[in-house]
Amino acid sequence: MRKTGAIDRSFSPHTYDLAPWCYNKQKKQFATFDNRRSVILKTQYAINERLQGLMFWELRQDRPREGLLDAIYEVKMQVAVKPND
Image (cartoon, rainbow, N blue to C red; front, side):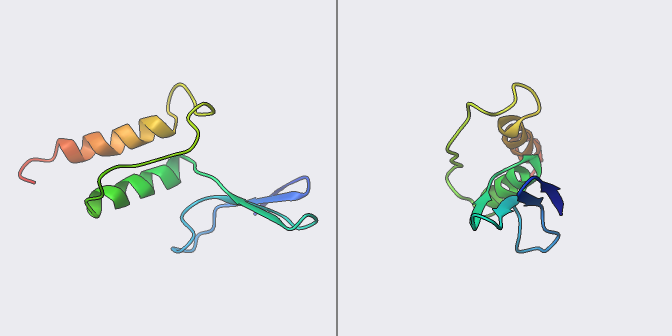
């Protein structure tokens, strides 16, 4: 776990924790967010479960290159090029 000020940041190795999170012990505040790894896992899950799409709240803070939207696209393209599906 990496500590930054009063906030602990973590990406748990447990299989049930698939997104990074922060916790402020002093304020008892908990927050989750996405990074490339969690977005790749969520996109793979959506495709495997044949869900009808993906949704996210905020695109404005994404990186212009190698960001979360790019991760979604990369996973989608890997699936799209597989023959005989």
